Image 1 (tube, helix red, strand yellow):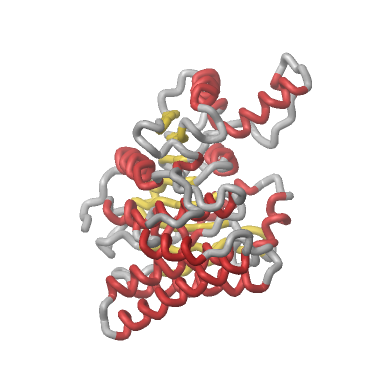
Image 2 (cartoon, helix red, strand yellow):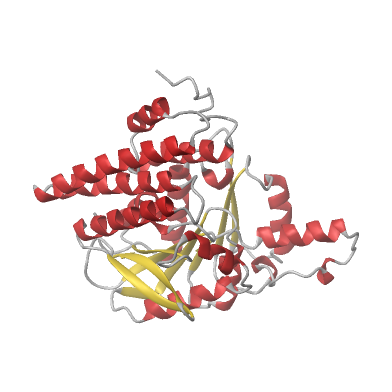
Length: 371
């Protein structure tokens, strides 16, 4: 039975867009092992409308239950079950933190618990993953999870996964790791927050050089003996990834990139030109030149849903008018008929990620050994 507050479109409590979006994310996470539908519907029945404390309390309780199952499975040597339960616990802790203010201590406690589950998951894998620290800004380092290719030996093609500012990397462990592993890729999951609290994002957003993080990541990867450095790609997960598109301009060592291709920068540029009645958009100030108007050699894939914030026709128009004849900028639009059409493919991320990783495999090359 579907709870009363769940609409026919799987929207939980329509008056709260943030809560509804997070619930949708949790339901779709079940496809990749980040949740179970039964547990999500159980929590939906227990929530109290308009009570953020109820949301935090119920998801935290569910996270703890999965965490306890993971510890018990690990103690008995059942590594697969331990990993699955740590992934779900990690995701549920993230959900518990979501509606709380950045300075709320309960949010930080949930984030720390989420990160501990991620570390336990990494340690239970074979080959084991590791937590890495990458120097970036003075007093602020990047933190990542490095997951070696399943072969565990030799140099493997590698994918960097990073979200928009404020997004935490833990979601990638259930959302993207399976796709990388199945293709024999190593993966480095990153966020810009490092080991800092969420309120550091305001300081980061005031910077005009977020793209400077990516060359630092490449410098780190170049030091590793298990990386095929000629085959390193990057995925900017979700929308608002123009900082990654700008990084591609500065980073010739990348072999492939999945990002917005500068679409958002170009869209804002056109908006300001229209707003101020400027006929020459070249005089409209933007932070950096967009990727598609450049001579970048890195192949780029742009994916979006036709029901997302930027309409498909507008995206096609921007791409066609900006890529200057380049055949290495590919736009893939997911339609409502095939799903994956929501913003950031939130309605079916699995479908989009299959397409993305197939494209990466065609650019980076298949690994010599897979599971």
